[in-house]
Image (cartoon, rainbow, N blue to C red; front, side, top):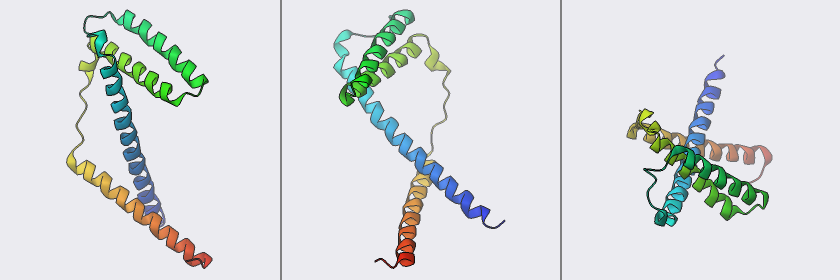
Length: 139
């Protein structure tokens, strides 16, 4: 069963690479959310808005998102997705639901380990490419 260890290691690397990709997407989408908050800053604060009003706003913006998806308008899809996410965050904020989060912070060691796994995956990809070239007689 010595063959299981490399498979497990490769699976772990793939999961960590996927995590890095997901974190990158969350970071990019988070920036879209911030951009939309800035674009809508003239509308004022949400602190005193009723959660049901915000739910109605979410429904309204979700319908705009649906239309953008139907029309395959990528710019509007991003804009309305960020609006929906912001409104959902506002609902969590005004209902004090955000206080329920006691999420542990990711340590620098975990970030470094993830970066090392990505480098390892890149090296594995290089070696697989070289092996393919050797097996097929291509440079």
